[in-house]
Image 1 (cartoon, rainbow, N blue to C red):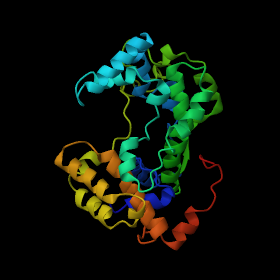
Image 2 (cartoon, helix red, strand yellow):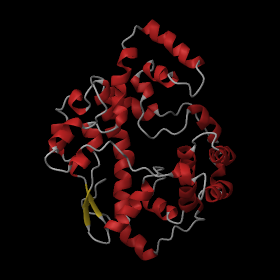
Image 3 (cartoon, rainbow, N blue to C red):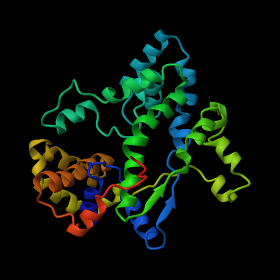
Image 4 (cartoon, rainbow, N blue to C red):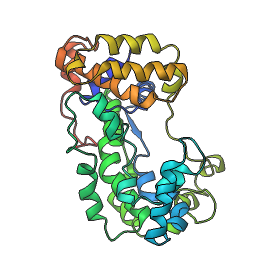
Length: 319
């Protein structure tokens, strides 16, 4: 809670990825010992590391059915109550990939955005970002298409931004060897069934096999794990009052219905639903707004730090 304004100041943009928090502190600890670090950004997008990439394999049976049958199954999915097993499977299986997959960054439905945003414009949609990318990937299979979408949205709009900004917050140079062009050229030749074998739950299979004699088995065989941050728990406990206070006092109320956001927070605290990502997204925006628009929040950055950290960095990853 104390560090988040500083983290948001270093970001410049209101990126609402909770993994920013542990990444900030890992970079801080690393900077006590070294000046340059290696990181693994790009490996999941290049080599098929996200478990969601297995979705087209699991949905193939439904998507291979005639359109008239899919239409009927889609109607059935609409009448199945929320939370009932099979509803999500039928919905996803009868929805084209370009309408179904948009990466990790879409937190609110259009209906929810209409309630949250004071100036909601239904003509502005997430597909404005994804449609051109899907057009470029038209000739690719569904799994490779998902990788392509992530490369041009999630990787460069979130993953690389947070890695670059959180490391440079501590004057730590971060290098990403998986994003070398030669690595990409190799990854582009690997067929889907060697990235994600049809049977089983493996991800990054070819990469794991290539590294089997290089790194310990416990690492090679470890299941995919992101950088989990327990915002779900925090917002029901020690962060609840802090979050409620921000959503009550924020000057962003002319842009967002903060009463609606507080309702999400309160429902989350009662355990009615997991609204943690939605609430966190609004909180980060409110903190960003307070620092850069209202100028009512001190991020704790000294003038000397600001001058040092805003200098151009030679070889900066995002640049």
